[in-house]
Amino acid sequence: MQQLGTITRIDDLRKIWKNEATDFTPWLANHLDLLADELNINLNLIETESQVGGYSLDILAEDTDSNEKVVIENQLEQTDHDHLGKVITYAAGKNAKRIIWIVKCAREEHRAAVEWLNENTPSDLLFFLVEIQLWSINGSDPAPKFVIIEQPNTWAKMVKNTTNSTGGEAVQFKYRFWSAFNDYAFKGTDAFTKQFKRHKASSDHWYTLSIGTSARSMLLLVNTKTNTVTVEYKFYNGSDLDKSQYDAVYLQRAQIEQAAGHSLIWKRLDTKKESRVLLEHVCNLKDESSWNTIFDWYKEYAVKVYQAFEPFV
Image (cartoon, rainbow, N blue to C red; front, side, top):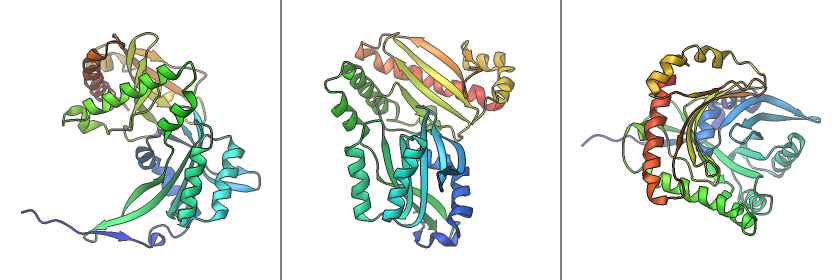
């Protein structure tokens, strides 16, 4: 029998990050993909030490799927009232809809406070309370782990707020669709499951496929109005409109499309902070018996599109 190691938690985070502002915040800014994967939010860094009046927010980012601002406040200690007030102040100052509070240890009263905020605020206002932990196996280098203590029950909030709305049926359709996709697409081991991680089903028209960088992402899209599903490869340009990465890749368009096995729709989007490349497929979304065929198409072409772009990014 293969010998197994012993996992040990490192309680003193200061052994790795001595100073919160000069050590942990820069590290997190360079590893937002780790946090994004855990929270199922696609994060793009805007700036660190962002000014809010006379205060300084640790990290200001953007949820690139919704284009909403994200405030991230770090606390390498036990939660306290001061930081709870700060995260709310920063959210108001930046008009942010995603609030992430990262701590060493969450006290029960603050966990309850974040839970209350998620249950009693609009459905597009999302609060996350996350613990940062360090673990070692048999004395190995410490490995960081984000543990979600509180997060929004997005589906429950959405159902509560759209029960009587005209869009409720479409919202529920998308949730059923992505739930079925998760159940089907990740039930075995294949090229798709080896490349992409399972994310929670949502009521959005997109499903994010993380590819290990905040500069680019892949999305699966569903459009019930046009009966179209799409695999999208997206480039992010940060806070400016620099399109150099997209332009360099576009020069390899013929090779990329040959590898993907299809012509692609290229959208430079000169006035936007992102550029998009799309592969669309027309289908009958109302016929739920055909969904598995649609999911097979997603899986096949998500892998092909990813592999087509990889040599050029």
